[in-house]
Length: 282
Image 1: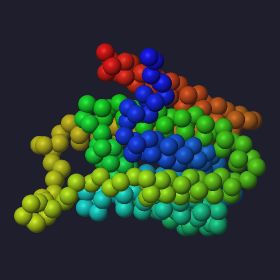
Image 2: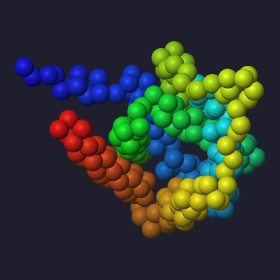
Image 3: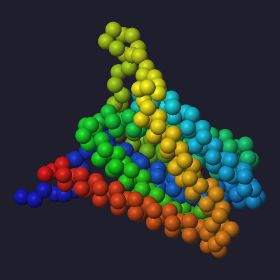
Image 4: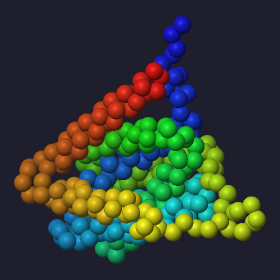
């Protein structure tokens, strides 16, 4: 008797994993509707200034880099759900803020808060996956999550190209709605998974401290990934402006390149996960 392949896939993972996949796909699609075109949007809003849009866009990862160091500890202390909900609501407010902003300092503040929100969300979200997934399946589940991100990266730029040409404010409001929907999914469908932070004696558990001796591979990976991150950041800053100065239909070129990248990455991830799934069933 043949088993329904869809049921096999659904039952393979905890329901919390699928909630995260759906929520991540929603926010990533709308996020990639904005990200490639944000520097161009700010360029128009600031009457052709090149430096100011790049500084504003750069504030988000810069602030996020510092906040992310504390994100894991905060999720252990206050729980995964509260931190994820706070982060999503902050990002939702930032998307609404773009609609009503007009001054440089307002855009800069939004970028800072958005970076804080993203940096708070990811450590808690990754820890939540670790809490509910067995160790031998974590790589597979994280690959599934990354596939949902790449689906968003594939669909978002084309949708963003259409929406920005129609109404830029509608793009930001749609993104705000996706953050709200993701937050509601987490609030009502996702259980709290954080382990207790108190020891059996009632004394707070000792906090793990990062040190070169104990975490050398992790610190080296972080340092070595910085140049890659800097290069990738050019896709959202100087690259759109470069295309603008060299192509007549620069937005279409940008959206096409990013869509091709997202589709190819999704196919590669799906293929790799499929190989692992077949090996697990053997």
